[in-house]
Length: 315
Image (tube, rainbow, N blue to C red):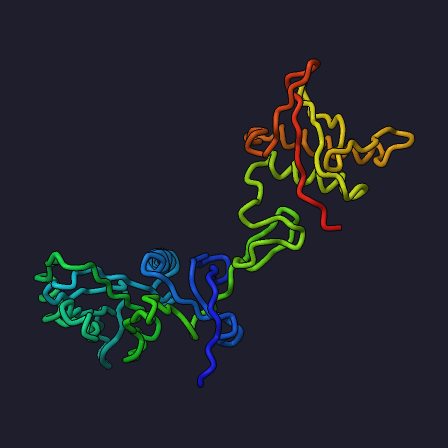
């Protein structure tokens, strides 16, 4: 029996310019170290849109493009012209022709195994494209086309591919060809993880990352206190006046002694944590205490006392 590789749901990108895109892939299936993802039709549309933007920005000779052509299962055949804006010489006298592609889609036959066909954009194909109309009321169908313009410009006959969906309805775009890598996410602690690994070594989750300056500062202040007391889980912070000030620190429900002479913390560490919170509050859009997970604590002396909970230390 042939060995099958387990697939995962993750995200992929190419450097920092292309992606990230949700996909399915087998981490064990590699091409020169790169992965080979497959995409839903909706994500294939996102891949198409980004590929066209890159081609517009950098030129079609330096970018492949992905095209999604929509139709109906009961539609008449249609022809579609895809134009790169490029031209090439066709004879020794310097005559040139546009680098274009004509795609003919037999919509009524797709469900029976037929596929779209690709040719040059001849006058007959252009005429057929002008007459083509999206007709029918049947189920929606789509054809995905991958064009490698550099090779098409050089006259390659295999530079255009109709990307057919696999058994799951996913489209393997750029597999074993493009330099796809698994995208990563960055934890507030500074550690990066592959997208499908949802928990960082520090204990923070991908979806639980702070999204505001005050949220980031809350984590940083907690990490600062936990350098000396890893058991610290929360603190009371007073926002009354013009600055934030840590009043007390707790390990679960037990208050930790913060006295200067006999406490677990030194003045410098407490001051550093205070300054982290103050700097965040001075940001143009720091975010609200509620958004950072702070809870207002009733107090007779101040109406700005908050309980701040820190992620558990992994020390």
